[in-house]
Length: 170
Image 1 (cartoon, rainbow, N blue to C red):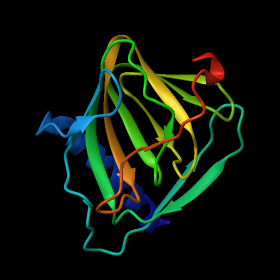
Image 2 (image 1 turned 45 degrees about the horizontal axis):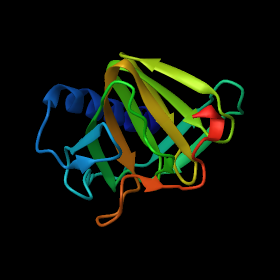
Image 3 (image 1 turned 30 degrees about the vertical axis):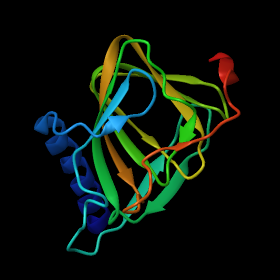
């Protein structure tokens, strides 16, 4: 039990520290009006200790999900989403912890089309691993700090998934 609490604490402290770092070198765009700054090298987060992560989460209207993840291949990024900009439909190699630090983000999974609102000061877990979703910013835009797990040294942070354009009324 103490090991699990310590593991979660390590992940949460990483989010807080990264949120305070501010912008570093720009690394690219991920759709019109979306800019990501990778704050750690690929792959980042090489723990010197034996660390495992277990995420347990429940979205409204869904069963509780448990995901075990190896945090040794993690990347941290600051993502700026311009007002009204929308991510293309995509998934991730592994789970992603997202902290909305400014503005407002709406997250939509293609599996249920529920619009989940996350204002500044809130966070959520995207399970990755084939969970196709999109997200879009409100009228004030959004700034996110995201920790991507299970990212290989040459692999992408996001994996585009075509064929969902117009899904969920978006």
